[in-house]
Image (cartoon, rainbow, N blue to C red; front, side):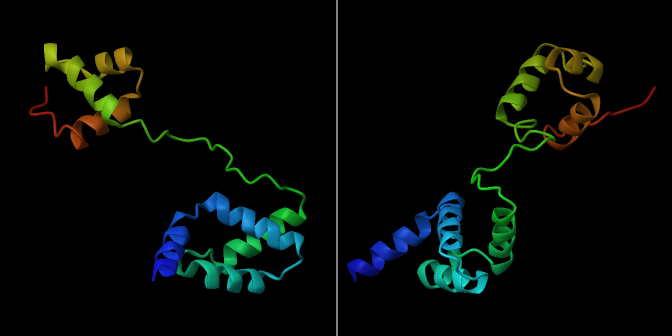
Length: 131
């Protein structure tokens, strides 16, 4: 019983990086993608990587790219509407609730469209009337 609990804990503790290293090791041993997937499924069960991902890893390795880390990507950061931003906007609006989006944009260095979306979605603030 203790062996099953330990094996389950180990299966769940595998990260993507660990699985990539196992795939890299299997490529060195010249195993087929199907053989790798079968071995991973036997060892990790539902946590195993798909055959499509293994095939992609084999192609990348055959091109000479062996780096296991993810490359940073461009785009909007995940912290653009995080707790720190919520607190900053709330603090900024605490003094005067009638501040414009332009004023918020200038002080918090966020885009005007992000401020509009943020106020409407996160803080439930909408323009009550139009001029």
